[in-house]
Length: 363
Image 1 (cartoon, rainbow, N blue to C red):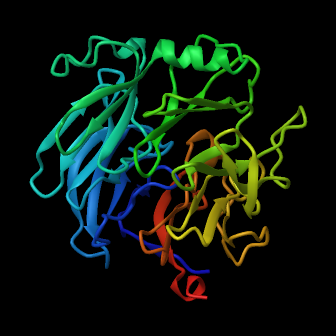
Image 2: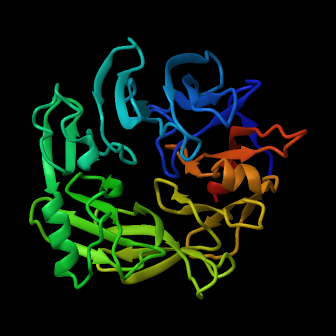
């Protein structure tokens, strides 16, 4: 199927993580990044109208290509994106209408905001780096209420270590430095990727219910997990037979917090997302030695109903770390992703694109 470029920019354009909020809640605007050279960190944050008019640069950042600056919308005017501060990761929350930076916090950013709350994590290298936020005084997972500006500590590093041990797993030096922190839609549970000794390939998936403090851990977790609803996950199930992670046996499924597979949602995948009504799913074939095509699935069917072909360029996919990272629009009528171009004379480029899938998803 055909795709449409978000921008005619001469360099590269990038979208953020799979399942990111590419569009504003009202569906009127798109956020993306521009990069003149994929081998350099200089990156620009841009916003345009839904019809691809009125492109406006809003900020300059430094970042790599893996998930770009992870730029997403929080509200119709508030955006969040990753930057770099003297070699440390930070994130900024900005009013795109006025240009005001509401918050700059040196920390590891999360996937996106939910219910007006944005989670982030602090590990030892970030301690003492946020003098404007004295409440950030220990390692762990924090939650920022973007409306009030209040920051609360959701889980300490000791909580995370104890959670792992209580589920019979062995912490390692990286366990408390969690990643992929995500709140469920009601912001009552937080999940995170954990490094543990027993799961060197896939890691573990941890979850803490913020009201009851009950914890859950899934060893050898499914990958690129997102919340399906308040109580279950959707993710790609992958298998490793000791030599490599298999592409052909991967599939998208729904899981309970305890790790039980509840249903099959789609077929071959790595990075994945779902339409807001959970009727359609998308996954990319982002595996070594394959073109990283994007597939669209109808819930419960491993056979794709549409295929979006992407040129095969191992250097761009793996050395430069540009992954398709599919994300649905808020209304489910568009599928956004990164589409790399075939390199020419050693020039590597990628484009942020979308496919109009409205004729498919109406059935």
